[in-house]
Image 1 (tube, helix red, strand yellow):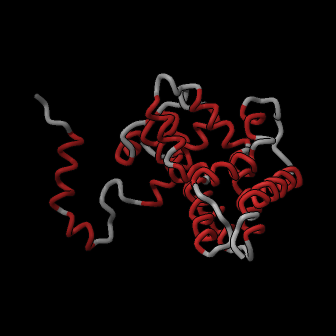
Image 2 (image 1 turned 180 degrees about the vertical axis):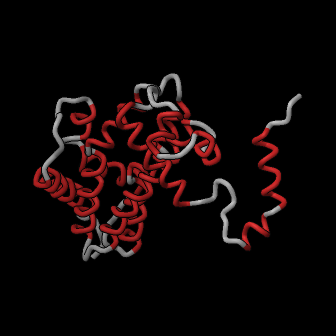
Length: 231
């Protein structure tokens, strides 16, 4: 049986790790700039071609790397797509969380969070990605689970933590903060999200539309949960 040249080549760097580090060279697959270059190229490729149509060859060409380099960093197309989703989710949830925590009071915090979340989840980029994943969900359920990820994708965990803080401070009275967090997320996005996803609202929303929905969501939410809060 012929030796696998990739396996043979991988063994040598393992023995030379100290020397490689001393010369400032990165271990294969550990260059963050190269990884990001691949992710950025994959994002463009998936959005242009769709998940199923995009091949690893297409992704490598779009990212400007060899196919061999691509496989050093990612096991397959599903692995690459999942990491892309994780990175996007983390980046945008971090922004929404910052808007929430930097606000001066509950009204402003909920409003800012609702605007940030709705803006992102009704954007053309995210709607296209969701449609792409929904199209392969039955055949590739693992991909769908990874795409939608843990609850932070919906903002539930972030807003729940914020509600917990305000309940502890006596500003709100909520028996089930997870349930309430889901309510708020749905209130903020309900006028638009499904209509965007299924194409009955083809254009991206204006800032005014999103802010109007967020204000209404905050009013309804606090009218219920702050009405019994301790003072």
